[in-house]
Length: 309
Image (cartoon, rainbow, N blue to C red; front, side):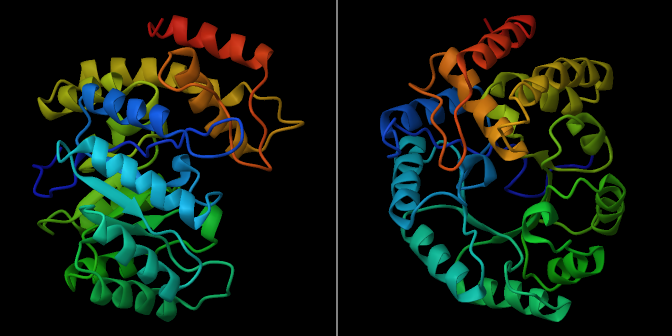
């Protein structure tokens, strides 16, 4: 595991966005989520990511989320803000709004919906960085934006000082390992994995940290995993990762006949947090559906097996 030479390292959960029954942001529950994560020992918070339902939230809801997260964190840990929009100008607008709220960094994907050439993706990140006062991290999530950020692109943008890091949710572990080799000597660049069931392997391969959606449910577990890896105790890191991998089975509980993979994952995280008393309800954004009572019972059993109840 390489030394941490970046301000964005360790455990950085993508904060879920609790919703009330009427679909409004449940600010009281969101405050509890932030305190739950900070108490769990996280190193930073990633607001308005995929687990935060950023693609579903209105502009007003996104503003509320950032206000609450930044205020509740109160400088105890950095807050990274997702500026997830279809095109460059929209990202810049969102990034400027987030900057004014006091966040520490901006996270942006490649453009999407529009058909995009690789040179346009390069230009996209360069223009965002030029317009922003804060560090910019790339969010590599091709399943959602339909463009995989190439190693060459990330390496070039890192060398040119355009990107301060990458959050890799591509699922391409070979590319991630090769990127870690490419950037091994790139001081200040944050290499973060979103592959929450193999964090131990990614840290061993050179990652600086993780952005685990499951970290909303069990931040202490990811804290223990990272601490074990930091001291070179890979047996302990593997044991903790094995337990978290079992806990991750909550995302497979929702009936696939009536729930997308996104709904199953977000619904599971929110249902688990509701069972643990962190949030008031497992409401998700439409057109997703909340998990049922039967599905909740199955998640409760998995939480008990993982030692969380």
